[in-house]
Image (cartoon, rainbow, N blue to C red; front, side):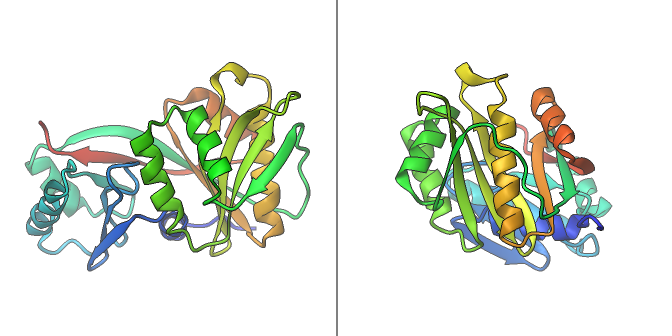
Length: 250
């Protein structure tokens, strides 16, 4: 089974994690979500052939972010043309936060989940509140998170795993985005890390997306998050590409 390519993964990721507001400029997409997550508050190009007037377009879109009180941010994937990168270089936009995109084929074989698990609609307050507590989100972030989940249109489940005392100790969002499983907001309670709950919540997410018809899976992870990268590789994910962000210097 072949793995999805960069363009397919990026399209699936945009569907899986929608913004509150989206603007299109040719093959560029600018997304706004009150500042919650860089993926939902950045510009990116979906076609390396679309680089005409890149400098003027960068400036115009940057003003859209400033008008909303947001720092302009460009997400650089392999779909960003060298001409676009050159314009960002000319403006001395900083490079920061490299992430890996990992993928794997999905097979209809159930994976063992060594913890009590419950699935929720992504807008369910019980799931949102439990995930937010484990992630350490404040009220403003939780409100932005809820606004994003309200925009989701692809088949999605919020997943919680519980310890023996029925306390939520792991969470993830699982999305079937046009046949590609996308996993988001994966977190394990700090006091419960290293006990297998990360593997349990990921196996539950892989099981649900496989059962819902997804043929492959992809996940984004910070390159320096060694424990998470190790876990995902042990589950069968392999690196497909990387991306990073650019932003104007302060």
